[in-house]
Length: 324
Image (cartoon, rainbow, N blue to C red; front, top):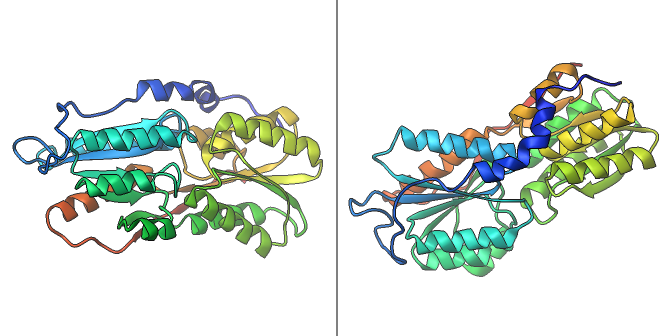
């Protein structure tokens, strides 16, 4: 089944420009390393939001939510927003962490690109007196324990969210139908959890997972992977994607194949709205990215004000379904 192209498809060709259009927020002068005030002379704390790829609309939404929050609470803290050019450049995120320490931030609120590889840099930040709050993608608990680093986690239950999306697709398929999974970065905890959730749904419905490959969260990679899956599996009934960027790439491959193949995503970015509306996307999951960073920032501010570090906190996930 072929569909007319829409504004959402124009976003697919322009999305990489986000990495150029979005930059570091905040206009303060860098503080000297080790500044115990973690902010300006008036003691206002400087909070760094360190995200993943700014080419991913989810993190653009996250940055916008944080900036809006700070604009309404400018007397409470100063915000610096940062992001990477692509999802796999962990070394760039490590560099950003080091830069934020050098700028004398009081807290780093981070959505880690890798659940293990950034822990040493965060440990060095903590040793320099910087509070670390983990959002979105959970840092590996064992690696944190080995490093002696405490970092409260504020974020969604990715396994549960992915299970909901997988179930929405499974309801439209017969037992034994062939499905494929395009997962995110395999060393990212949220990517691992989303795959488990999709597998939970497929297993419960008696579906056959005939292919599984990492699209590294990226649209272009997922497009090529989906095209290959469609070619190799003529009976493929659905492709389950671990985020919406990859779902957009898979949707283009499905359209090019002229086949009726069901599709799911995760994140509920604005670009998938046309696909939900016309049925090209069966389901996605809203983890409310605009609020996620705010929850992490508020957690950091409370700790900086003297509150005890909270237990890990689970934030909402909501299923969003498309046209049947």
